[in-house]
Length: 181
Image (tube, rainbow, N blue to C red; front, side, top):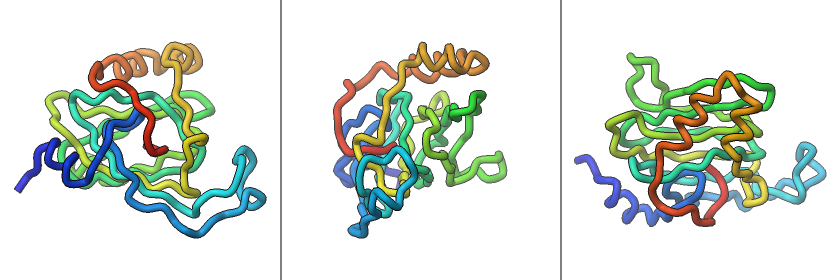
């Protein structure tokens, strides 16, 4: 039985979030990595890993952002999710996370730390439930929202995609919440 987006939000207690639709932290490791053992740029200890549920809907506003640690998206339910990826060195691509393996989709997507990204449903899609696992665990100070115009000037070959991905979601206001996405 397929669940509607509202039912998923209620069952998983998901809340609006500025970067990834609706979220709730599902897991945070109690094991800590000391700052001295982390790569440059981390300002303190981190959990070994964190996991967030996130729900993308047709009317959820998505924010172009990057996080410091690597993350892995896992697709669980619903429609495919398109993800615009803008790596630090320039260029970019659109990857699709979903369950139609024969169409070239994959149920997982690695997003290297520091990669600007934003997600959306394919046209006509209703919702997609995913999780993201980050290692080390992400903290609010590890998340940075982007100015789409600034990124378009730094990624001119992807300017049209940046505009398309960031202007398509006029819905819920951006609110603070768990880090990630």
